Every structure is written in C-alpha cells, then in structure tokens.
Amino acid sequence: MNFSFFLYVCIHIATYFARFLLGYYAELFNTISYTIKYMEMMLILKFLISLGIGALIGIERERKHPKQPEFAGIRTFILIALFGTISAYLSQVNPIFMIIAFSGVIVLVALSYMVSTRENGDIGITTEVAAILTFVLGALCYTDEGIKIAPIFAIIITTLLAIKPYLHRFAKKISEKEMLDTLKFLIIAFVILPLLPNQVIGPLNVFNPYQIWLMIVFISAISYAGYMLMKFLGAQRGLGLTGIIGGLVSSTAVTTAMASKVKESNFLLKAAVFATVIASSMMFLRVLFVVSVINPDLIYLLLAPMLIMGVVGILLSIFVWKRTEVKKFDAGVGFQNPFTLKPALIFGALFCAILFISRIADIYFGNSGVYAASIISGVADVDAITITMALMAKTTISATTAVTAITLASISNTIVKFLFALFIGTRKFGQIIGIIFALIILSGLAAIFLV
Image (cartoon, rainbow, N blue to C red; front, side):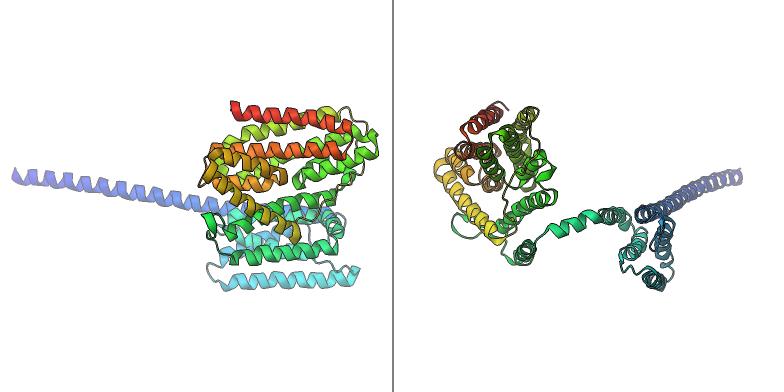
C-alpha cells in the first residue's frame, strides 16, 4: 500500500514537471519563432525600401533622358540599390565584402563614364555620382538607424536632380558681391559663433554673446530666404508674390516702394495698396514663426492676436485685389542683402539696446515700462523686440506680458508704415492704407483684451 502510494506521488510529480517543461519550451519556441518572423519581416522591409530608393532615383534619371539614358535607367538604379543592401547583409560574414562591392561599383561607374564621354563628349558626372550614392543608400538601408534616414536622403537627392534648371538659373542670378557677402557672413556665423562664450555677461545679466549672435543669424536667415526668393522669382511673377515674399524680408521696404510708385502714377493706387497690405500682413505671420522657434510656450497666447491681424489683413488685401486693374508691374522694391555685415551688425546693436532698455523698464516700471519699451522699439524694428520679449518670458516676465508687448510692438510698427504711406505716397494712398491698418490694429487690440 505504501509502495503504491509512493509510486502514485512520483507519477504525479513527474507529470507536473513534464507539463512545466513542455509549457516552458513551448513558450520559448513561440518566442523564438516570433523573433525569427519579425527579423524576416524587417529584412524584407529593408530590401523593399532599398528597392523603392533605387526606383525613385532611377525614374528621375530615366525621365531626364527617356530615349538614351546617360549611364543607367530605373532598372539599373534598382539593382545598384539592392546590391548595396545585399553587400551590407553579406558583410556580416566578412566585412571585406562591402569594400570589394563598393570598389566594384566605383570601377563600373568610372568605366561607363569613360565610354560615354568618348562617344558623345558629355563630361557631366551627375548620373554617375547619383549611382554611387544609390549604392550607399542601399547599404544604409540594412542598418536599423539607416533605414530611417536613407529615404530622407533619397528624396533630397532626387529633388536636387529634378530641379537642375532652377538651380542653374538661381546660381546665374547671384552676383559676385552677393556671393562674397554671403560667404563672409557664413564664416562669421558658423566659424566665429561656436567660439563665442555662451554665458551671461555685463550689467543686469542680460547680454549673452552667443545667444545674441545666434539671434542675428536666425533673423538674417529668414530675411535671406525671402531676399533670394524675390531675386529668383522676380516682381514679374505678380504683386501677390511680391507682397508675400517682400513681407518676409521687409514689409517697411515694400510700403516705401509702393508709396513711391503711387506718387509716380495714381493708376497703380489699388495695386500698391494690395502689395502694401499683404506684405504687412505677412509680418504678423513672421512674428509667429520667430516666437515658435525661440519660445514655443508663447505660441498658444500669441496665436490669437497675430493670426487675427494677419488673416484680417489678408482678407482686406484680397478685397482690394479683386478691384485692381493692374496685376503686374515693376515694384522697384530695393532690398539689401541681409547676409552683408552692415545690416547684421546694425540689427545686433539694436537688439542689444532693446534688450537692455526692456530689462531696465521691467525693473523700474514693471509691465507698464515693458509695454512702453515695446511700442518705442516697434517703431524701429519688430524682430528685435519680439526676440527680446520671447527670451525675457523664459526668465523675468510673464507670458501674458510678453505676448501683449509683442502685439503692441507689431501695432506700433504698423502705424509707422502708415506714416510712410501717408508722407511718401499720395494723400489718397495714405488714407486707404490708414483705414485698412486701423481695422487690422483694432482686431489685434480686441484679441488682446478678449482672448
């Protein structure tokens, strides 16, 4: 009886352990199986992305030369990209395989280039370079990080290949002086900037050399983008584009130019009003963008007044546009290259002064002093006071105070442009601009008090 009971217990214990082991190994097997399937799916995905990259670049190259491709078409580029991924996969076994494969692609491309130049005399090497980059992107697709960035680079490369005529046209429109000015500024911005001390110095602890110069580079870059767009597209594309892009560079310059044009010919009155209003409206959107980069926490409070003034201005400009007889004329807006040292240093000095004055006003007069400083500063430049308030909102003033100050500065700058329109242009031009700007300003003030 005792032996039977002992045997019964042993059988139950053995059964329990058997079930436990079977369950454990079954779970382990399922985990391994799932991992293998996941790895297989990821590997397939990597090859599919590589295939897509080759097809994207190949389509662009074959589209440029539909009858007789220079070096390779869509099929060849797909194969090059896949070869890069396969090479990266096989290099796990022997790293030397990637070196051999890459060298082979370079030799193949070089031989093809020699033959093509001998036959048709074309010394262009763009397609050959694109093929080498396609192989590199294909290899990049095999890595976990590379699979995320390879498609981005593929899109950038394809875009650069596709916009060749526009790039050449753009390069031809840049003068030697503009190129030299740009290079000088870039050297100062990206060589000198990292060497500046990133710490607060001077009275009231408001001056940070690195931060101040970084803001100069940032504002100059925005203006430069608009400047180059204006130079590239030109006023012949229409007043709408002139006003929009001009607002990114300097809405004050657009206002002054339009006022001068109206004085020459009253026939251009409505067209000039449209360009002035649309450029001034873009200023509010530019302010929003600047603040979103420097202090995103202010956006939710600043969005209402800036967006309302911008939208009201755009709607009023559209109303004027529908009644405009002249849609195109040489606006004659004289913009100075924002990447020359003189305007950059002037903005830097103005920014430092406003930063210092705003800090003193906050210490001795509180919010009222900040508002007064913003109104006065807005007369000269709205960017400097916008950046100052966005930075001060991080440390010394409240978000509400900063938003109100930025809005008041924008309104102050708008009033100055009205005065330019009134005294530089005709009386009629000034009156119309005054009425439209008054509506824009009222909408901004309403947004401050009601939102």
